[in-house]
Length: 147
Image (tube, rainbow, N blue to C red; front, side, top):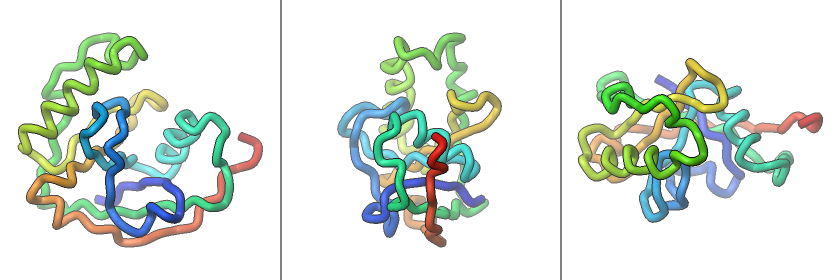
């Protein structure tokens, strides 16, 4: 399965995680956030960048997750009804932290808040299967100036 990540050119050459806090990870937890499509990766960037940095210095990373790698699904966690609200950041981060600490899988499938019924895939760089996940390509990406 190919997943997508849009990032600045300097970070597009390897699979690295920042350790910054995000929806599914608390500060200090290293997670690589990816999306199931280029368009979802773009929309996720758009909502988080708030108009800053929408320029031609971005790349789309194409990341291959082999079919032999198990993918854990957040359905297993039975998300509560309002999981997607800003008030529940801590709730989502606790799920991500639990997944990272347990090392049951290298990949966690999570629902997108931006587009219902679509998904993002979190990659744990500390899992033994991480070495099987590869960066297979980089493409130039230009944000549409109308956004």
